[in-house]
Image 1 (cartoon, one colour):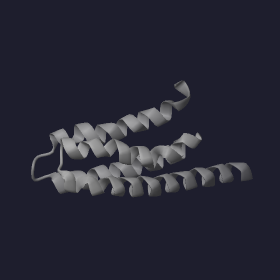
Image 2 (image 1 turned 90 degrees about the horizontal axis):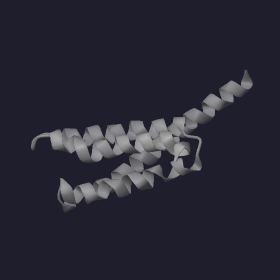
Image 3 (image 1 turned 135 degrees about the vertical axis):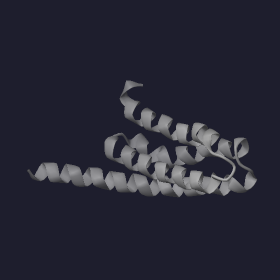
Image 4 (image 1 turned 120 degrees about the vertical axis):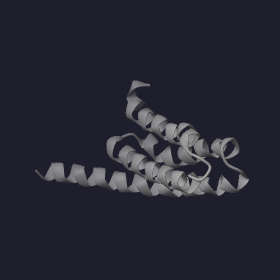
Length: 112
């Protein structure tokens, strides 16, 4: 469990954004909240791509989409189910960016 400490911290931050953050949004703040959660998902996936050297990080986009799905039935309505696809795509792009940054950083270190 200690081996996956960074990944679990990032996943708990993602869970906070999905489950706790909507409790503080008002009824008129829904679009802003969704954009903020998408931005947070993108940044957290970049972070896991940069920090993690474990292959399990490539499951993060799928886990993000799966973890979002119950929030549709808790906070939103059935039409918000399509947002799980957006979270999958956004976290996949962020993970690719973060992994690319990690590879670039490792390549720069090896040249020195």
